[in-house]
Length: 81
Image 1 (cartoon, rainbow, N blue to C red):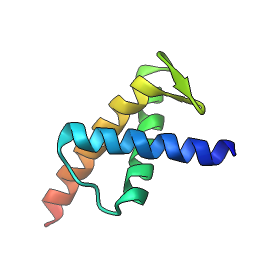
Image 2: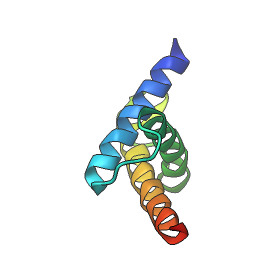
Image 3: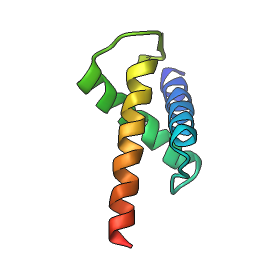
Image 4: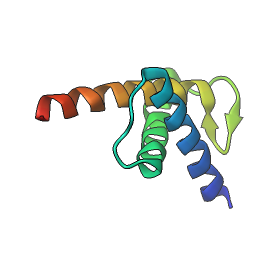
C-alpha cells in the first residue's frame, strides 16, 4: 500500500509542476508519476527534507525538484526536435 500511495503522491506532484510550468509531459499519467518521483529525488538532494511529508515525500522540495526536472526535460526535448 505504501508504494501505491508513493506513486499517487508522485503523480500529483508531477501534475502540479506541469501546471505551474504550463507544460504537458509526454506519457500522460506515467509521465507525471515519473516527474514527481524523479523530482522528489532531485528536490531532496538539493533542498533537503523540510515541510509537510506525505508517503515519504517532502512536498515542497519534491515540487521544486519536479519543476526543475520538467524544465530541463522540455529544454532537452526542444533541442532534439
